Image (cartoon, rainbow, N blue to C red; front, side, top):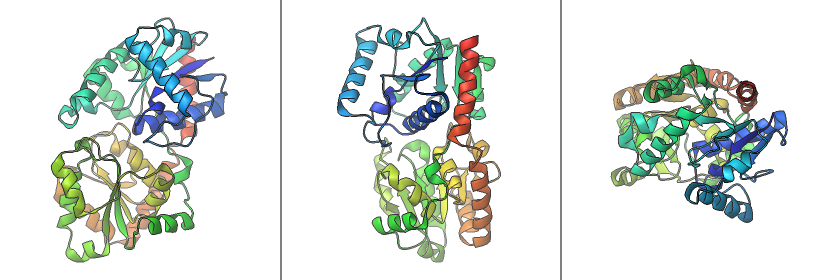
Length: 366
């Protein structure tokens, strides 16, 4: 069996989809071999993961983006050529005209543009509408959680028998981070006090204003002991939200090599998102053994299991109370941290790749 995966999101600035493709393709190749798992454009290997830059060299990046432009706007049959000899072509949201002569699959990462359109710019909404048409004509679809599968079936009318929920994974870098790396990242970012950490793009869906409100509601003594730290690039958040970031320690974009030790160094991880298809930051914090407070909606309860405190993300009071419980109880933090680490062991890229290969085999043999 040969599968070609559209890897063009690896050539641009991207977050969750880029993380997924980077680790997913590498693990698929470890399991099945590079000959069985090819990419469009052709990339034999990737450089270090970074969300701000391509993961391939300059020549490969420009050649790949040129191929994508020719396929999308020049109507050149480049995707058909890339799929030649393959049983399955796995497409992404960047490719407007995936091949029609090869069995087609795709991954649906979330349905936030459909369920919370007010939290996205118009360009995102247009891209998702276009991708929805590709999902509808795909032979089979991977959803990154059961919740995402249910939402995609309900909203887009996809055949549930053609959609398989396969959880994404957690990078091995988040498990058992050495103490010296945690200490080094504390020194690098001048993190003197214990801290509550949020990681993610600063955008409306991440619900930063409610988080800042909840932190402000903590008693002065708790706020004096525990700092609130936010890390992640500024996306399309409101100007008022960006201005409020000074109410906490805002670190901006954190290089990937610092993300695991920064996460592991936190006393508590907080993630009050209004919608997630999977929720990489939550799974990563659990892998690092950090107790988590997150939302009781979308895929987050499914991913967290019994290893997090779940709250109504629109209630600053509920979020404050959950943070207070954790911050005032070292025993509860230890218990949730241990449960989180155990839960994260079930969310590995190895498991994801094994299930994905069985998915491709079924599609190829259909």
